[in-house]
Length: 171
Length: 206
Image (cartoon, rainbow over all chains, first blue to last red; front, top):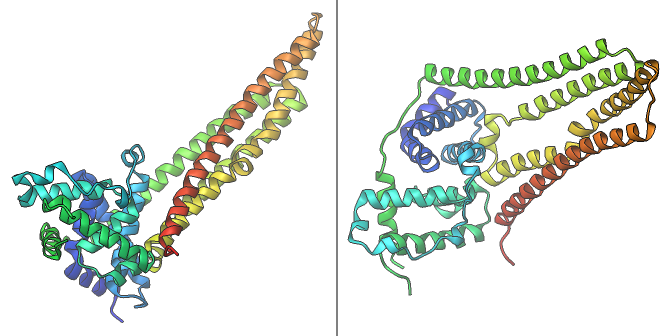
């Protein structure tokens, strides 16, 4: 079994960028985002001492990352003061989606980030894992959602991505 | 729906940051120290608040001459110590980082919410009840003390008016206690709704 330091090095090498994206999706403020990223790495580093290979390293790191980030959201005063929405309540149509600018990469990313930050933690976890390319079984392993709920929500995410970000309306 | 456009968005997302930040041992140790410092400061604040209440009632217990008032002060100090201990215990009951890896997100968040809900639901037993005996005795002691001082000064003691004043003060305290209990119960109900939402995520619709 690899040592904690070796496991940590592997996690950072393979998934460090995904953790960076995860932190940015949970925290808009750049300073607090840095703190959140450090908290995630700290929890990950501490937790890896007891990693026993019961699940894959990727599942482990996403669980730690999302659990730390969800606790950060729960304790954040700004988030407490506003209502987070479910993915089922996100409008498929978006007026901004029809503008030519929306094709531009940065604008689309900014809008996607803003949308993700409006979501409840459980939906945020699912959207982020989907965007990272994790399959439905992997998403269920990390989040603990049932297969049916994961499938329904992935379908919803695809609709949202298609309608809001590509300017096409689903018939 | 076009799978192509969806996968383009996924690619765009994954390319949005290729920054793979690694924290070295010193960074992580600094992070640990910062976290421990935050906990120490929080503990210090709690001890300072409990110390202030203790000092005030210790002073009252020393100044007031009657047994009932002194006993009320002692019980209030003991009650405050118990509440401070419970606050400290509940705030310290944070899960170890390894729990975050062992449990999936729904399980982890549910256990956190259940812990908070249970603390709010039981607020009467660990926050309100420990202060009641001391407050009750202190108020009765004040009533008795006022009566004895008035009579010693050869002035008429209006029992009816004193009882009304006693009831008003006790009523105000009761209103504050009931309001705290209701607010916490409402908070617990809100948390229960979030727990129910999480439970629904683990079950497929029949």
